[in-house]
Length: 155
Image (cartoon, rainbow, N blue to C red; front, top):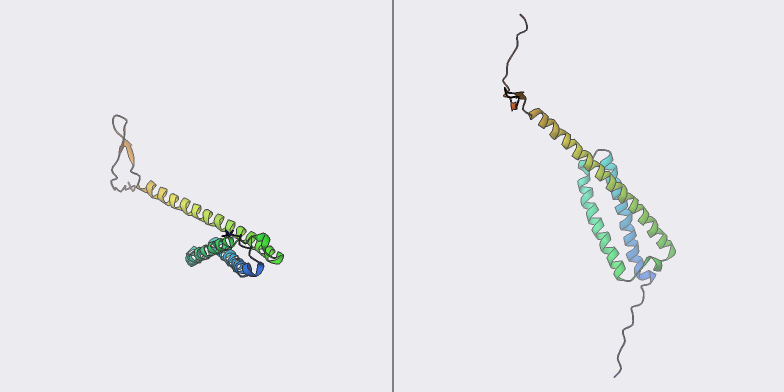
């Protein structure tokens, strides 16, 4: 009896990974376009219009992540791709990274501006509700009850 040795699987060839790679490339471009559009909507004040964009962003991100894992599982690397496809992937990666960075900064700035605005409103309400104070005979500060009155200055 002879023992069989397992030989490593051959590296995927360009035709095997070509379809996966072009799908990933398409997802990268669609996701970059979506992020750019969402950033423009936030900057122009159309925050209510971004909810459907966020759902689509999550869907595309999960699909992109899944395809990348599948490509890695197949053993393909950027180096095994044909030069033109490799250049497209690199360019799309740069564009996606730039769009994601701008989108993240815009959303963070918008969130911070909203938080500051809410803090200002809360402070204003607290100032209006702040009870007036007075000193008593022992020089201690006490809350004074507001009593409505009118002063006739015609005398």
